[in-house]
Length: 522
Image 1: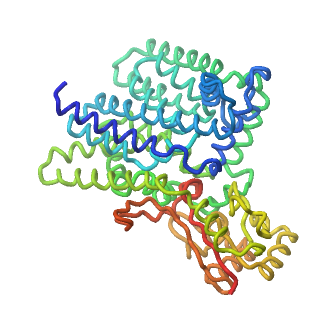
Image 2: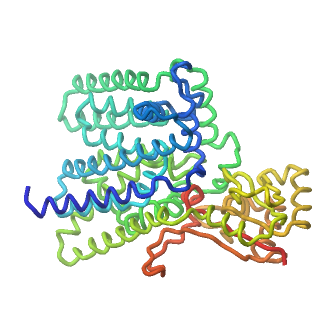
Image 3: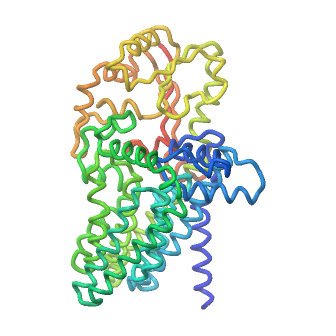
């Protein structure tokens, strides 16, 4: 290998390690991501005496078992915090592995070497992949296994193993069976492979997937009824037939348009979204198989009631692939070639900026320190529940705190009375994130938009609308402190580049960089 090639790959590796592993201990010992916390608690409870039953079935056991057995090698007790660190390391390693598989995919797609290097760097600097590598959840591992399917789609053994391990990680990965089915239909239609061979291919994948899913997540069968109950619950939540407080942000949202405006620009970057959309139109004619992959993996999830950022992890990969294919065509045209470098520069900026989220103390910790140093002991504080951990995070015994679950207020007279009394008697109000006021009123969004009719919720929540309208307009309480950690680049203490993203889909910011607002009674 030529010297400059070694240098290029070494630089890519360093950037990958930096973006994926920087400060994996962020936020600890506090666990702000509810899925991460649930997985860490489940992993820490595993033991051979209970047949490795996690007593948690929203996700399957494969990542929990990796965490458990890795910890056995250390001989140390598997605490919840330790399990969190190991889960985050697993996510980071899987994300780095995904970068390698992405490079293999670009080779398979016959992307030229200069554009391939650009494509790899864009993938490395994509904000959503950086974020997911810092969460001890399932998504980074699932992206790795998805890319394994794409790269080795012709190999039934590898595809079967990848789908089986995906199911052993999360039941919704059953949708990955669409990949070999579509590949088979395409191969038969184009007469590349006989129908008989394709049937053998599909049967092999199903059989191997079943074996690996059961072997690496045995409680799919051992705790069949509990797994089924959890699946029914999660399905009802996702489809909106079971109302829960943490899906209220999706009331009044419009499928596809919501993802285009509230998810993709933040997860991928605005230039990549534009080029990806062009690319998706391009591959309909040039790479119809991959266009079909995108359609079956995006459209069903896009039309679910719950439109979380993590529900469309596979389409992110396919959108970037479509963008790279278009950029390769642009790269060969002298007049448009600089556009590729402009896009690359922007992706580098947003990638570095997003690592900045983990480069500074967590905003909830900063807010807690400010409260402890500024708010007099004995002060009365209103705060909101449903944010995993209340602020202040510690030293709360120094204050008289009323933590209200405001999602219930319209139908619960006791909460109404509590809020009324608290507003009259409290010295401070802490709004720990945008969750409640952005989900239940129009005071944040201001008016209905193409992607969400907030007025639907506002009409249902007159008490909250009045409370937050008065609070945010500083009628009785004055805003005295605000803490944010938007993705940003600072030079010499001054912000050089920043992406205010509080308007994004709720989970994009509230788990790792919410905006905390503190008000004092006038």
